[in-house]
Figure 1 (cartoon, rainbow, N blue to C red):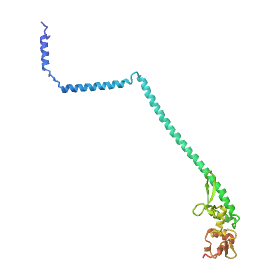
Figure 2: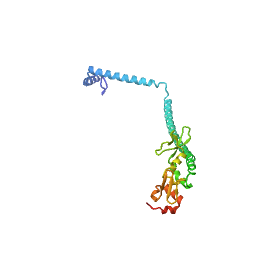
Figure 3: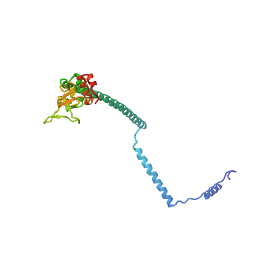
Length: 249
């Protein structure tokens, strides 16, 4: 006989059987089974893919991998820093080149100006001096001469003097079309009525009468002096009093 308060085997079996009878029963359909099989296949495939990825890391030390990643990051930072320094160096070289270029450009301009003074201004003065009335006439005529003369650089880097026409094209003379020289230009200017009074043998003769290479004409008033060059030449030839004595028209 079992002690008091202790359930005997018969009572325990009866209780368990009663609980089992109370539990609801589950019936699985073919659809449920198919879904479970499909889900199980997905899990198996995912595990296989994961194992395949892990194979690439087999034999690697995690600490070594971490150190390699850090080294790569440091190398990339160093490369970026050097790239920044290269940009600074490039900017510095560009500025230095610009300064050097400006220096050479300035030097070239000075050389060109010296060549112009030597080959144009000096040659113009030399050609004008013997045929003008006074030394001041040379200074008066020189700007007009310079307007017709330019410097041209040839393929060898030498400067050549070129006399131009009114359109700026190279001026020629004679039937052969030879290039006009500064001496030829001075001769042409001497025949120009605007400059005639500044040249010897073409100024005023006597009282109010002026002769030129193209004929005689009379200066009766200021109106007959059509340019500042003629006025200056008249004053140099006859004096300021004679110039003031001329009527306005």
